[in-house]
Length: 140
Image 1: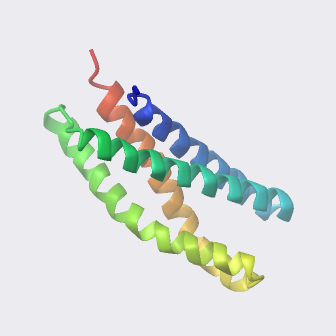
Image 2 (image 1 turned 180 degrees about the vertical axis):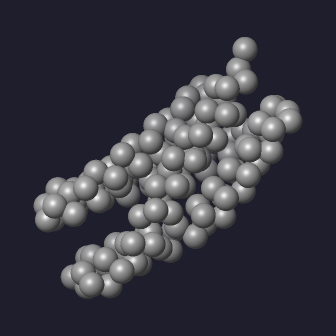
Image 3 (image 1 turned 120 degrees about the vertical axis):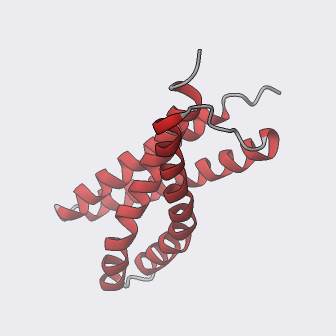
């Protein structure tokens, strides 16, 4: 089977997650709890699909090295480093945020969500940037 579509799929899932998290935030700020919940559950699903695709891609193809040079290489590695660290940090933050919501602990949910949201957005958006830099910016 040809799995070369996985990097693009992963970028789409990251972008989808970023849009849904942003939209979910928009809805909760306007008191639209059901719409917020739907966005956040769908964002969690998109992020889960991303993680499955990412792990599959790396199991099949290993690490893809950035072939840019100079300032682009420095920028890429700075983004990749912060993205990677925060991608590890976001997993338990999302878990705690979701558990608090499911258990109806909305004060605790809101407190942790203030930390979770910007990190989740950063990881999702930088995931798309990393994809673009690896697969699109330097492609022939």
